[in-house]
Structure formats: C-alpha cells, structure tokens
Image (cartoon, rainbow, N blue to C red; front, side, top):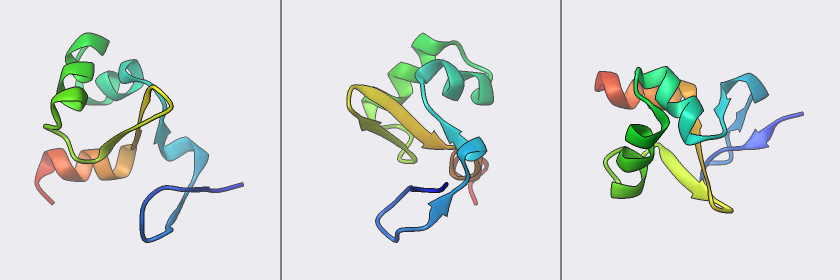
Length: 68
C-alpha cells in the first residue's frame, strides 16, 4: 500500500511517513513541542497539517534540513 504524499502524486512507503510532531521531533533531535512550533510557524515546508495532525516524509524533511 502506498500513500500519495504531494502534489506530484509520488507514492511514499509507509515507513517514510512521520505522523506526529513527536515523530518529527525525534528525527530532528527535538521534543514534540519544539517540532510543533517549527511546523505551525511554517519554518519547515515539508511538514503538512492534515486533520489536525502534522505529517511529513522523513526523506523530504531530512533533505530540507540538510539544504538539498
């Protein structure tokens, strides 16, 4: 099963999806509150809010942070 991740309709594997601010924070070395702040302020464009929950592709989030 794959999930559509972006406007270009590129499927992502389930293991690449980060489903909460806590998950996103773990990847970034932050706590959930810090990750929530970055997401809600729009500082990280790879994080999307869907249904009251923040979602991100781990691959795209790491690429954004590393400047790729």
